[in-house]
Length: 194
Image 1 (cartoon, one colour):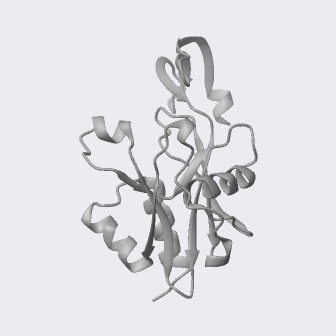
Image 2: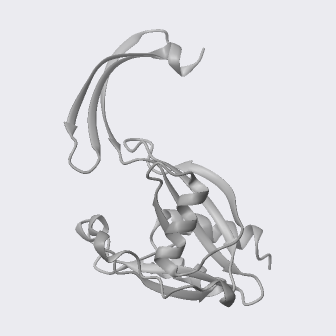
């Protein structure tokens, strides 16, 4: 039996359509014991996204960004957030969108991007699927200083760190972004093996 056989949607209410979609759905769910139970859940739909970690094998470095994130701030994080370059797909393919995001945010035009996995980041309430990429970079690929798009309110600082330093930043709490931690761990396990 598939999940589709176990769910009957009763009602979907649109709660907000300000910037993204917030919906409340009431549905019947068939439990493992065969009984149908009525449940209600809210989902937040902001679209799917992509994230990429640029790396340089010879220099053992990665490119990261640092920027203000309001949601992190109101959750008690009083610092700029260190992240891998990322963005929403906005109707583009994951590969095309992440190439554009990396160029906007860190200033490098990457030639070969490689998808390594995709994941739901918070499936209890958020519908987003995030596509994870890595790509090699070198100085010849730099086309600008990066920094993001001012008209989108972005003020992004570009950081180049050794992989060892970036991994240490996870342990100290300087890197607290889940997608970035996942890509740095991927890099440590698959790109640089000690």
